[in-house]
Amino acid sequence: MAVIIVDGDKCTGCKVCELACSMTKHNVFNPRKSYIRILSHEDLGLYLPALKPDCDSCGKCVELCPADALKIITTGEAAVFMKKTKIGSFPAPLISREV
Image (tube, rainbow, N blue to C red; front, top):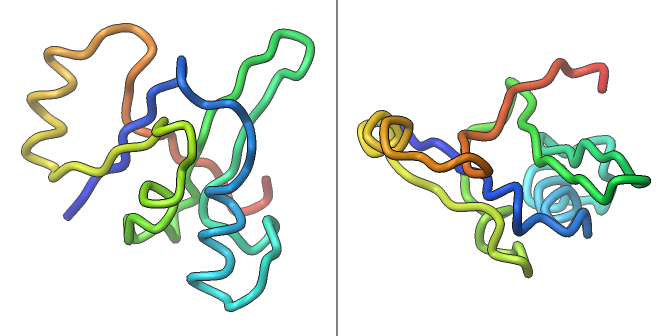
């Protein structure tokens, strides 16, 4: 199994990951059908990619992220990563389907 890692300092909120996911999984450019969402606070310029439970970590969002804010690693690597992580990099959080 794979884990998607987020570098919150790099995410620009472009939402390319949302479009890549929806096209890969549903053959349509529709962010509402994406399994990854960008949570944002526009006034502060904060963007956080978050995963829906249906995400299978296929890696298409990682492959197409222009800011290189996403990375995919194995669950074993994720455990080691969590112990060594710096603030600002973390596994992408899960969100409910309603978001």
